[in-house]
Figure 1 (cartoon, rainbow, N blue to C red):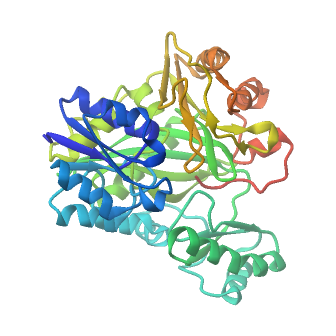
Figure 2: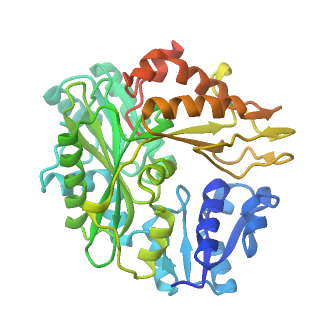
Amino acid sequence: MFSKILIANRGEIALRIIRACREMGIRTVAVYSEADRNSLHVRFADEAICIGQPASSKSYLNIPAIISAAEITDVDAIHPGYGFLAENAHFAEICQSCHIAFIGPTPENIRLMGDKMAAKNTVHKIGLPLVPGSDGVVKSKEEALKVAKRIGYPVIIKAAAGGGGKGMRICHNDIKLASSFMTAQSEAEANFGNPDVYIEKYVEKPRHVEFQILADTYGHVVHLGERDCSIQRRHQKLLEESPSCVLDNKTRKRLGELAVKACKSVNYVGAGTMEFLLDKNNNFYFMEMNTRIQVEHPVTEMVTGVDLVREQIKIAAGERLQLKQENIRIEGAAIECRINAEDYENNFMPSPGRIELLNLPGGPHIRVDTHIYQGYEVPPYYDSLLAKVIAYGSDRQEAIKIMRRALNEFNIGPIKSTVPFHMRLLENSSFCKGDVSTHFVQEMLGTVQEPAQNE
């Protein structure tokens, strides 16, 4: 087992990894930007090194600085968390060349499954259904128009190398497609360093369901059930839950088996997530794979009792996965609300600043993953996530009731947060019945933004 791990990340995920390491008797090294000097992950790690200026490009994305910090502190491994360098195959290769274990998939896994078109072609060969679309990257608007004519409108343009809604456009006619194509390419290039895009049939009002995977270096792969991530805004998840209230046991079993089969086919190693779209008739389509731990991993931990971060570390250290598929049970229901520093009544405007008032929820069946504290200065440079509140119940309705109680206890000021949004969502009758899609938030708020179809 590793003796010391560097966490190449910040915020709540850095703390989450530090806690897992401490329970395992592993020392930790935090890296931080100048803006994060007073962050909790810096305080709780055994060692800490400043790696640069506030901008991500000069700190958390600065590979030479991170590798230098790892070599100076003589670590055995680096855990990238999620975001930043978590799905960067080049970074994983550099770790290998420096004889530092990368706690994540192999560079080959990341490169293959991180390229959406390559991933789709790979899983299609083993029987996973795909949304109709282009056979590969679309290079020109003329080619895009031909694809749209073949599969029919509406269509969606997607960046081949990215996610989070960047380089993504929904088009209902030729005029919109022609005008959006180059914009999508430019946005993909700016965000991912790769202008490649592809075209798919747009599945209207789908649900977004993902399966959690763990795989060791000996070819043993299991899934830990699904998460429903349909509550999204502008391609960003806001609330996740496990299990999905719309999957029947037959569909759940089939999707889980396909997810495991796909991972085995590429010799996948580590934690990962196979993402699917479900249409209104419960037909499912493979969307993409995320080759990292997910923000929403706690809901799976709550219903399975499996510590996913600990399993990641053990797999990277060469240990065999002890979990057997037949022994994994989904018990009860869990819901996670992402609490962001945003003013939802003002179009979710970012709300950085100093936290003067803070009361975090607690009590039975509540978990709060957060890096904030009273007096903490929320920086404007990074993702606005403040905390994740996770509620567990014997069933979905109980989990909703417990979450309502928890959010009533969550007080923060003077900065704005999305707590009021989640309280409104949890009182919505359609949400409580499970009648939602990736378009639900826009409908609930009465806005006209294009519906989300991806993380």
